[in-house]
Image: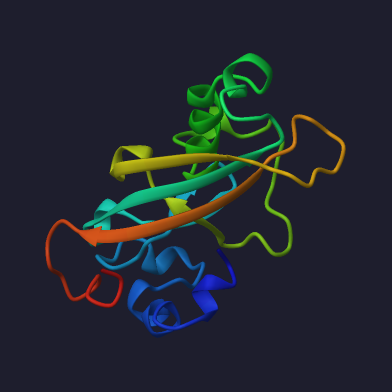
Amino acid sequence: MKNLWKEQPLRKQIDDFVLRIDPRYEGEESCLIRRVGPFAFVPLVSSKIFLTAKIDVEFFRPQSPGDLVKHGGDLDNRMKTLLDALRMPKDGNELPPDDSPGGDETPFFCVLEDDGLITGISIDTTQLLETAGDPAEVLLIIRIRTAATRRDYRNLVLD
């Protein structure tokens, strides 16, 4: 995510979104910074700029077709774990105790402010024919499409 913000069109928006980690700007209308514990999160999909997300997942796993539930864990539980990993924590209880941001984690860029901003999910499973030997290992290709719920100068290049 950090590298994505260095590319267009997001690079153009950095000043508009006031991504400087400076408490003076956090109350401003366009600031995407959300503090949780010692972390300063910057979600790309945020209610503050009226964006939602549709997520398409191509799920490659070593099991043959139809074996996902028996040997790989329930697909719904795996997807819940993935969606939780894409969003910022709701509060400090979701962070490891005594954790603090690393040198390259200020700000901490993430995909979603909240998983309630997801408006659609598509999952396709395919057998992974080349494995690293661990039957629990999977390969995911994730495509995220943003959509504006309301036109706003802050989301024009992101929709």
